[in-house]
Image 1 (cartoon, rainbow, N blue to C red):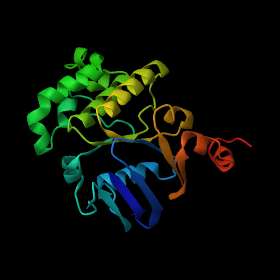
Image 2 (image 1 turned 30 degrees about the vertical axis):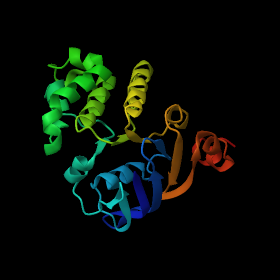
Image 3 (image 1 turned 60 degrees about the vertical axis):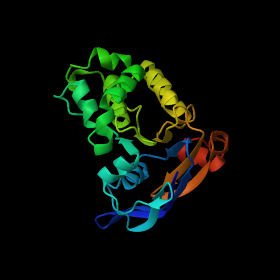
Image 4 (image 1 turned 135 degrees about the horizontal axis):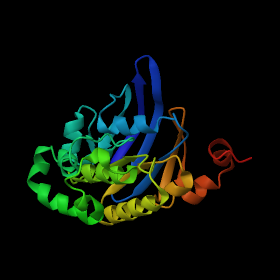
Length: 235
């Protein structure tokens, strides 16, 4: 579905990504793992077109999308749930969700997509008229995921979706993500908690200092001595 080939990204004079390659097939659940500052969020930003490439290519369903704007990538079927949620706190839950359907192709399906989101997160339907800023951290994360779903993406990018979310709510979010995947969405998940990531993803890529250093299944990665030493602090 999506293929990154040796991509590089610069932030001014600083190179944030040096050489990242990954390949995700339709319907897969894949993790992007690594320490804080490794370049995980920048990789998602590059896929969305927020950060232009200084090298390499990104192909989505066989097409080079390097010249597409972020809005065009959303229209093509890619959506991002950003780290920190980035909601509009004074706007209602429903208004925040509807912001996710700004793409022209998504506008006719606002009602069925709202119904889908409320089915995944019933608490949001109860609070649909409440300002999003008054919700708990976990409920705000549900809104952020729901907003991304409003464009009916085939590829969903999730950047640290469990950050600042209570453990009991994490279970609800994970269950919703499993349903989203079961409905056919392909998911790329950024997560620092490796064990939690492999409760959901089928395989993962590990990046370090803007470079890809490892890939494999949960067992292959977690049982790799180098990974355990560098990323889990185990000797």
